[in-house]
Image (cartoon, rainbow, N blue to C red; front, side, top):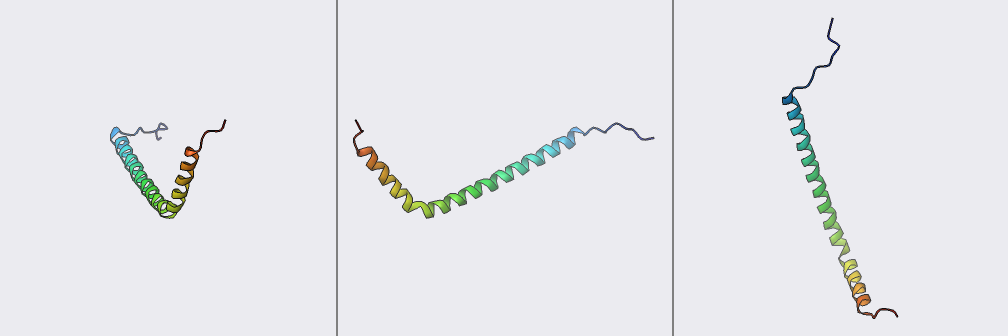
Length: 68
């Protein structure tokens, strides 16, 4: 008859699996950073005119005297 107890993982296998998981996480982080940079570039190209208008509006508000 076979044993009904489970075999335990060796430390070497656990270490290999942990290293592989960390490698996958680093790879995913790099992918996410690359996507964010691309999105920021696209927003920068499309949002240049919008940013200049917003900055002008912010200056007008700071120049006006506070309401009494």
